[in-house]
Length: 223
Ligand SMILES: [Zn+2]
Image (cartoon, rainbow, N blue to C red):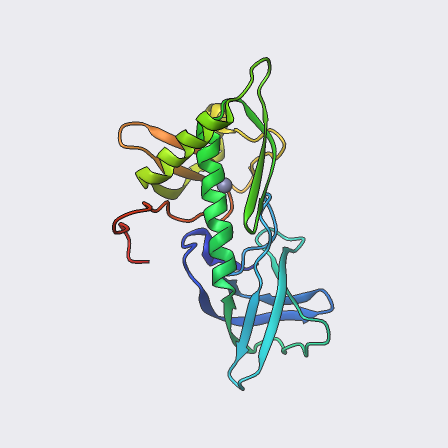
């Protein structure tokens, strides 16, 4: 099991970690800032830095079989570090930040377009959500205008957790019909976009999101 540091702080770019296993599938660490492919968001790339100065390029990150198991996939031909090796795990931050911004933008899109989400994809530079909107047509210009309004408002984006039972009682929170939230662990992570007087968006979400910055003026956070 890997400690998933990005869950509570998506802005962590690197962390010290220890290699727990390394084989032909990839490298496992006791903790990581690398997000593994899932929930429509690609896995992180980056590097593992060893005390010796050696740098192992990580091309992709995927989930293992066990819960919270993360596999860092090195470049072909890379020499694998022995279990116990101390490393610094460092993601390609520029790419991850672009993915986080797209992810947050799709949460806002959820708030603008009514209807169940039936699919979606966060990609570098583009994103997609599929909505089931029976019997109505959507106005692209109006959606874009409302989306830009929400971005300009710079609302807070905050992860929080609720129990499996509470989620079962509040099924309206589940917007994405194609991917069921991972219940069974006792709690489910939610992403909340809080508005001034009402919640903009609140739904199960396991991936890293960015803060929504005002286009003009100073951002609220220094990070
Ligand atoms: Zn999300």
